[in-house]
Length: 493
Image 1 (cartoon, one colour):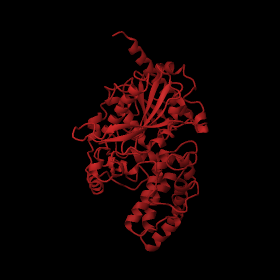
Image 2: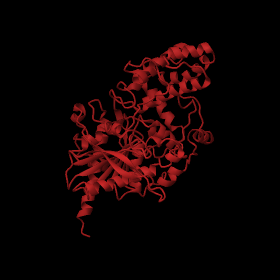
Image 3: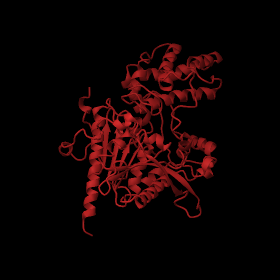
Image 4: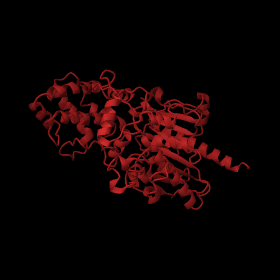
């Protein structure tokens, strides 16, 4: 089943060297069962630190409370480490409970675990309930400000926890948090000795990668999910268009898909198709090998499950769309508790979708496009002008598409060191990620059967061997960084 992919991880150096590095590794902490997860023992303290609203100017002197979670049960004072989760766009407790990898390896690395909440998300609101009032209040929602928060927090921890002053710190994050982890190591190498950037699309900007790569990977996941699956989805868009052309057709769609609000206008139909599009995207992202509820409660290998309903792309429109409903209902109503499908709620409420919308309209501009030929989606070109107009209407701001590559280096990052870029072969975000080694210390780990940052999730008996191997290698690199840091400290001045 695994074939040649079983050990298809991107090793440092040549293959012979890779074998010698990997030989002494065993399925230890990074891949053992996670008893604390099963028993609900992920205990942490909730703390706050006062942060400046603006780290880079001198006219704004106001402050806010940043929340962070801390667990020090396994800390080995003097010889241990700090594993620092670079919080992303959502409630930090949600990320802490979905990052089992850190809890699994805390004892082995003698680590304090710190989960830092990103400003403007969760409870870390710079202006309280006015934080999202307008662009003026949102002006300080940037990756640069967030990284500065993290740096200040680490300094605070080292100054206030007895014995932690010289404790080395490793940054860990997934998705946007993985991007932040990588950028944290790049911008603050004196603060963190290394970073694990899981499913981090740091190159999904400007023209660094083709704009169609994301949707091609989604489509490939569904193509592999079952014969006729991606073709059925591709054909569904035209079927919807034909049926939605009449009032009776709109009524039929509303009834067939159990919509909470019936379709009445062209805008409603656009939103309906967006509901479907996001379902296919999210299913590809969280195509985990076991039941999980990261974005929505889902079965194991959900793409294969829904593809069982999408075997015949040549069915008449109404029969085809009835099958589409059966498939999409797995995503939106796997538990069977929903009485109707809500067009406004496509993922967990723990995600800060409003904040991310603003960030996507300022510096996090990730060009995407589809052509309906090499992917299963409706054709849609990348149109920066239209994108900018939408952003201005929504937030009163214009995007700066070249800023992220300018400030973080784009593909010119070989001067940096000690960053692991892990990517899953099933994850559509891998198209904008680093998938080949850049140097001996900027390394990649590919997980063929992995979806979105599967390696950061808690160990599970259903995990494919490739993710177990990936976690082992990640811990191996971390140990190398820690050992090197100890040798540097022992050197006489």
